[in-house]
Length: 435
Image (cartoon, rainbow, N blue to C red; front, top):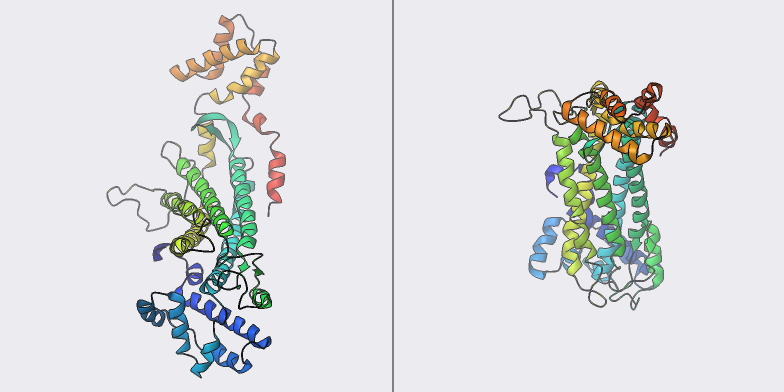
């Protein structure tokens, strides 16, 4: 992911320098476990532990010749080991994937913990926004067209619960990637005691892989990326709500617009929803990683490396983009301007057409068949659409023409926006305790 969208903590997780720090730590833990079991000389552990991790530049110079990153790393690290002979026991009995998969597991856990922290924060922010607007009337819309009266807090609650569910799925996905694999060339422990893997896993807060070949099967990693895609897509749903609400013709919502901010190089009046649009765009980047990573599950026999090049790009990009998306969405939610007066004005925009469903039921309750009541109500509504006349007026005329009597008290109740929302209280009770 480009630097523009990389936040410092997540950037460090995926940096080359941090990767080599993890590789050094894992190799040292394996070496210490070997020494404790009497497999290698105990005196080699301290010199290896004291050796500074190689720089990415040093590894890159050697890799240019070896065309093998782990061998290049081992050689560069050996150069930092005093006495150099101690390095002979580093990587003892291991294969490259023991190091790569275990270090990747640590990176995935570190990245997940950062994402969970941001997701927790966003769930709380959405909860607060939803509760603040539990009584804010606005037009509910389906297909982009007025449907029935709603409250803004209801829509926010829907998004809050969606974000919470995705966060909870991420917790589950974390367990699926927190797997240590140190079992040798094809996973048979041919030159490694399984106790080494168990000891290293414990030190790293991972669990030993229940089974592995040369690599851990990628289904857990694919699930993790899919979960990030879901998180990113809920962020997009939030942003899309703001984008629609900020349209000039709607103007119910507006994302933060800072002092000195510019909206257009040509049109000084512009206040564009650029945060929301950036969220929508970057969510596509996260979703785009799902299929390539999923295709890394089927590999040839015990292993090939067709998954490797994909993961080097897809996993950091998915994590970094999701991290930035959660950060941006928090900024959007906490800085959101909600025009409650405009929401109410838009609710009344169609002269009462938004109340047709309740008017229909009022006619049915008065004794009309549903078919007759629907035809009468729709005819009145279509006349209101065409002539911009109040719906109650056209409904009275249509009823009179059909020889039907309108109960004005029942119509008053049908056209009261609050009546549509009287049973929503349990939703907000659940939202209030959402964590």
